[in-house]
Amino acid sequence: MSVVLGDMRAILPSLPSECVHSIVTDPPYGLSFMGKGWDGQVPGPEYWRECLRVAKPGAHLLAFGGTRTAHRLACAIEDAGWEIRDCLSWLYGSGFPKSHDVSKAIDREAGVEREVIGQSAYAARANKEPKGMNPGGGPRDVEDTRNVTSPATPAAAQWNGWGTALKPAWEPIYLARKPLVGTVASNVLAHGVGGLNVDGCRIETSDNLNGGAYGDNERRRDEYTSTDSAPGAVPLSRCNRGIGDFVQPAGRWPANLCLDELAAAMLGEPSRFFYTAKASRSEREAGINGNGSRANTHPTVKPIALMRWLVRLITPPGGIVLDPFAGSGSTGIAARAEGFIFLGCEIDPRYAYLANVRMQP
Image (cartoon, rainbow, N blue to C red; front, top):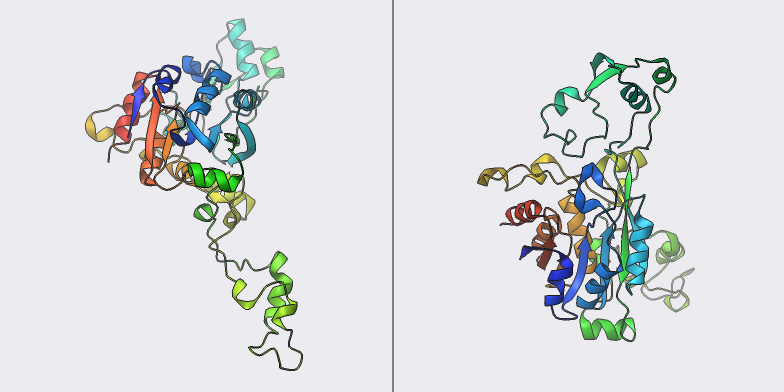
């Protein structure tokens, strides 16, 4: 269970066909985010075609995308032969805008120095974070917001308060499946994949879930008698379901919406959806600082709880999980915690090293 250093296009051909039960990955979004060369383009069909080859018939793929480029990701996956089954949304309330300050840009091009009139609310915390990172571990805005400055030219004053981007608050996660061989039933029996682990990913709740379509039968249940002979009793034979069918589910059916705790609080109904906090600094650097490694500076670390829920959703017990864009190893940590076998590829030696350190027991 480790991350192999190298390009997945060179590594995966060494694997036998139809050996992987699931693929969960966070590939490049094609935004050249923070000047990172590995984020220069969305992986094209050739990447996902090789993933298709090593996946068992009916195996599922979950791939994160960026809101600006997810359409290219979906097309590439589909063009490679996968069937797009759904698009999950991961909502979070702690995103930071990667925006360009128009007023500052005007003064900068004019070669004029702006007067510093104060510090932002995040300045004290931001000064303690690694360069390029926001308080709590998220990537810092394009503009450095530690200092508050005033426009130095009339043109800059006119455009004060204008930017170039909205605050990010969600990411799409595409769910795809390798075409089945025969029916779902025959494929599951032959290859061990093809379905989703609904019960294993239900959302815990204390609510009574016997409402909705069960409502009428729930009312009738109160009228049942053991003999069906009491005055006014409704015979069991006249109802769609018997008394024994009214079993409280283990939780709510998993939805294609995931929330972090802030987003759940804003929606006011956290019990209806899977929710978890974004990756904290302690989670990002668990197992790293104690062995002489430097901090985990990967800009897109995903929460382990979210990754555990995702790998559990599409991987059968004891299955093999592949992450061809392993980053700093969050999928591997999640797979190990869920009892799965993990295979990972990472092209950047810094992140491959961090991933293997973080994945150690």
